[in-house]
Image (cartoon, rainbow, N blue to C red; front, side, top):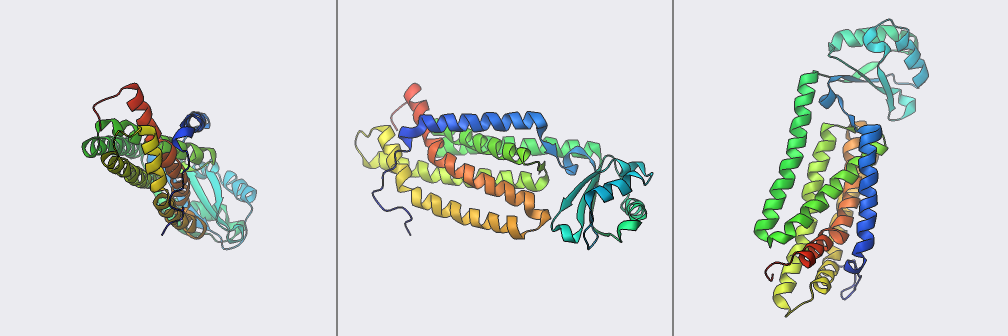
Length: 301
């Protein structure tokens, strides 16, 4: 199946300078967002308690906040309240610092909100600060090891000068995805971490397909100009890239719309990451390899 007619020639490499400017601006904005307002860590990383409750009918957020504030229960008075799902269902995420017992916290919550209805507990989680800090350290280690392993894999399978472009493109995808999630007010949670690791693998696969075609064309053609050959290779794999990305994007959008609040952050991160990863596979990875080769030429491929 070909979405792009054979022989189509888009000058992706010729527009690499503009793509670099766009990527630099997006990364700068993403990094700025991660500094201020800053990444919101989920309860599993920062420590604390979280519960999801459902009233079964519409409840105003302000009314719920006033009820908790007047409860006299210190753990509830300053809790963070977020409405999720259909407002007619009255479903809320309640978060607070420190550890809490599920039964005691729910009893206090029901006593405080008795005038608003009878809430049902749908989810409860409590994580200590030390455990949260350890999980955050492991999450950052997992991302670092993923980048390192992919650098080594690309360096072994291809000329080593292909590796920096592949890894920089992955960092580009991760930073922009996290930045957009931060700007949208979403939390960095374990599902979001899983989405980022999935996106690293997905984006690497796309880049490897392009690199494979570059290597094949290098072997078939005599004295090729590297920029022309890279452009040819990206165009030849463009249909495959768009079909693969479109399929994953459709699945991610389905989860985003139909998956409910539990899967929403994961689906949103996947949706953003697939779009950014497809862009970087076409415009960033190969173009960076060309820039590295033009500045620090090595042995012939």
